[in-house]
Image (cartoon, rainbow, N blue to C red; front, side, top):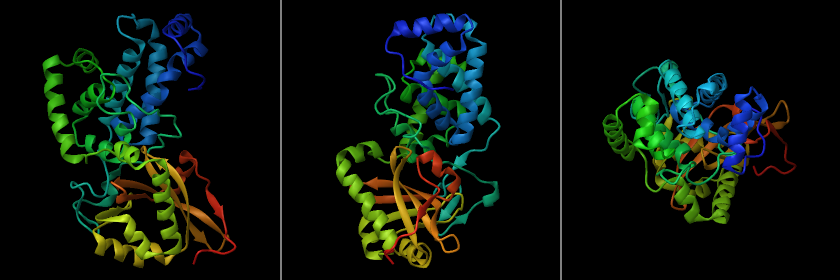
Amino acid sequence: MIQGAPMSTAMDESAALDAALQGDEAAFRELVEPYHAGLHAHCYQMLASVQDAEDALQEALLKAWLRLSQFERRASFRTWVYTIATRTALDLSARKPMRVLPLDDALATGPGGATSRPVTETAWLEAYPADQLGLPAGLASPEARYELRESVELAFVAAVQHLAPRQRAVLLLREVLGFSANEAAETLGMTVAAVNSALERARAAVAQRCPDPTQQVTLRALGDSHAQALVTRYMDALDRADLGAMLDLLVEDATWSMPPTPLWYGGTEAVTRFLVEDAFSVRWRHAPTYANGQLATGCYIWDEEQGLYRGEVLDVLTLRGSKISAVTAFLDPAIFSSFGLPATLPALENPPR
């Protein structure tokens, strides 16, 4: 969809709706633009894949355009378009396997990557460029319990993938979007009693898997300057292959995982072995960014043949207090541009090692 400035008043939305109902496609684009980032995030939460979210959103917006004459204004346009997106994502999720991270207990049974099924049969959760897609901070509505950025954090998205798709939709509609029980029931073709029961079970299941506090709360407590200093120290430790500096940044039970491989390392001894034998065996440069509403870095490996640093890994950092509790290293250089990162970085005159 073409994005522009958001409409400032309900009257603007009403006027755009009137024009769209007369067949004005530009008015329809203006009508849905204020909801675009939130709709994309909602589809990502349902599907844990950026590409699947994009496919679901484009299909949902096409349906909304084709069915616009059916919108009777009994509910808000927001409720109506999110209903279409939710149902579209549910249809797509029925054809897709559950997406996981390497530390997921349904896949990995211990540090080092012991797995319970072949990696070729595994669908992996993907990193999400919340900042690049314009996902705002704060609550989607006063009735929501989760902030928008909390709802795309790795731990939350991974946790909700363990819910049945319809139960997942109930949680997202009620807790993230602030739908009423009646609205959620109408969206999903359920009774209000069934929605309330599903929500209670979903809350309990997600609470077991999601750490407290969230990354948004942790980052606010840390403050921007300290957060940026932590990222700078992290990048510098990797660039210089400084084991002591890196271990100072990590909690004792920190984990390091690398989707789409099942390998992961937990605890100081295992992480130290990985750093010494693997990460520190090559030269790196790094660039800061954000992913899933969390601190992240683009990792560039030295390419001797080309004489430059080539984008290789996106490290998403999960914090516990002022230290790093998890590094989720997404081994997919194709995603760099989605996070505002260049594909390569130039050589340094005096590399740190």
